[in-house]
Image 1 (spheres, helix red, strand yellow):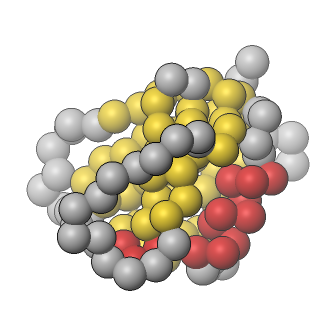
Image 2: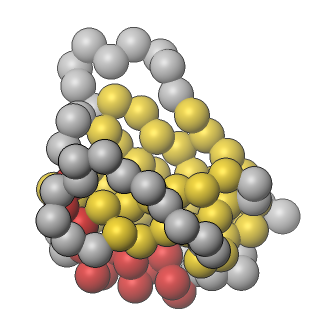
Length: 109
């Protein structure tokens, strides 16, 4: 099931206060193994964010532990939930311009 940007943000807002992981990686076929992943409590980020030549649209910022996850509506392409079944952690994967993939999921405590 495909999600729009509003549904992605709603999913994240629904998990605020929970322990999650966030991982970014290139979605291109020859991406290699360079990744960034963080684990911590999900919260709405505070403070100002400066962007250079950003596409038009909303800017939504969340913190995951000590890291900040910035999501731009203008860069958004698609998202989909990943369901491993009842009682298993929930995840969502989003694709953005520049072949960037962002995965956020519930992390064990």
